[in-house]
Image (cartoon, rainbow, N blue to C red; front, side):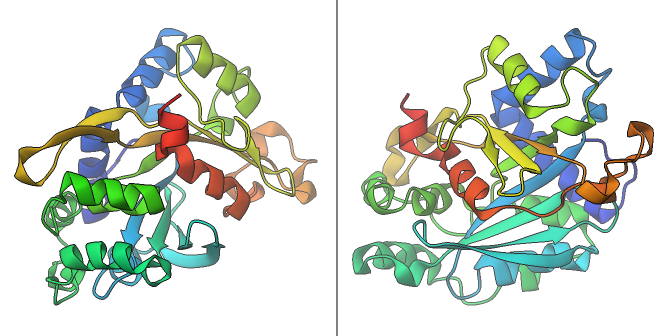
Length: 301
C-alpha cells in the first residue's frame, strides 16, 4: 500500500495499515519474500484490492455508523450480501479513485443470536448512547485513525468471550477487537508474470511457510470463474480480558485476490488491461469461507 498524498483519507488509511502490519507478522513476511525474489522492488508496489471491517448490528454502531467515514471521503455504496448461517449482512464500497482499496463492511445480525448472546453483547454496547462517528470531525484523518483503534466499550470477560465464541466466532472476534482492521488484500493479478495467478501465488506463499485457510478449498472461486480468493489463517495473539485474565485468540489475517479479465475485454493486449476491465465486486460464497480465517477450525490446525 502506498499513500501518495497527505489527505485525510491517506492519513487514516496509513495509520490503519501501519498498526495492522505491526500485529500481523505474515504481512511483513510476505512483503520481504516478494522483495528478496525480485517480484516487487518495495512494499509500495503491492496493490491493495480491499480492506475489511467487522461490526455489530446494534443501535449507534454497525454498518450504518462506520460507512459514514468512507462515504464522506468519496466511497460509493455498492452491492448487499447476506450470510444466512453466519447471521451477517455486508456491503462493499467502491473507492473514489483506483488508487484506493475497495472497502468491505460486514455486520452481525445480533437480533438473530440466542437471548444469552444478545444479552452479553448489549451489556457492552448499550452504554453507547450516540453514534460515535457522528462525534468525529470526518475531515481529520488523524482523529479517524485513532477512532478506529479506540476501545468503544469495556474489555470483555474471558468467560463471556468464550460463551460468544461457542455461538458466533464472528461475535467473539468483534467484542474483543472492535473496529480493528480485519484484513487487507494483495491484488495478485497486478504482480509480475509467474506470480500473477492465485494458483501460482499460493505456491509461492506455501514455499515460504505461510499457512492458508482451507475452508472451501485453498482457492475460493466465484460462480462465473472470474474472482478467485485465498487467505492466510489468523495468528493467535495473547489477549488481555477484564480482570487481567489472558488467553490467546485469533487476530487479523491477509487475503489474496485474483480478478480475471471480463469476457468482453479478453481481446485486449495485456498492456492495455485496466482495473475497469476486470471482475469487480465480491461473491457471497467466497466471502463466507474467507470469514473463517479467524475461526477455531482453521487456527487450531
